[in-house]
Length: 203
Image (cartoon, rainbow, N blue to C red; front, top):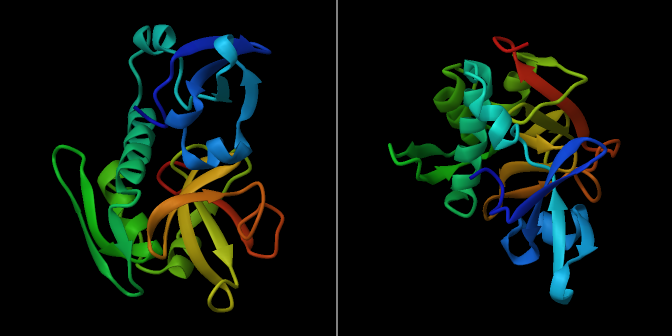
C-alpha cells in the first residue's frame, strides 16, 4: 500500500489511474487535489494516480533497486504520519522491522532517517546542508526531497519527501503530515518553494 486502498482501475490518456473512495484517500486528495468524479450509486469517488506501475506490468519486471528504494521511502514516510512528533533539534526516530515508525524529530532529522533507511545514503543534519548535498532535478520522482526557504529563518529552512506534483510529506508541528505543493504556504512558485532535489547517488 502506497497512498490509499484502490477499488478499481482505468486509463486516462493511456496513463493508469486508480479510483479510491473518498474516505480512503489521503486528506489532501479528499480536500480537492484529486479529480472528483460521480460514481455509481451517487457515491463520490476521487481519482488518484498510482505512483507505481500497474500490477501486471510490475509483475513482468524485476524491479530495480532504485524503484524499490523509492517505494520504501514513501512507505516509511506514510507510516510516520501522525506517529513522529515534531520538536526543533530533536533526532530520535525509530523504524521497526515491521515498518512501523515513531519518535520525535524536526523536518531534516526525519528526512535524514528516511533517506538512510530507504536508500542507504547518509545525509547531513540540517535542511541547508541537505540542500547543498543534493542535486536539482527537473523531473521530480517520488522519494526525492523538496526544499523550502525563508520559513522560520532566512535561507533554506524546511525539507520534506516529494510524493507527486501536489503532495509531499514533512514533519511540521505537531507531527509528520501531508503538505500541499499546489496551493497555500508551500505552493510551487510561491515565496517559500526552493525546488526538488535528488540524492546524488541516484542523480
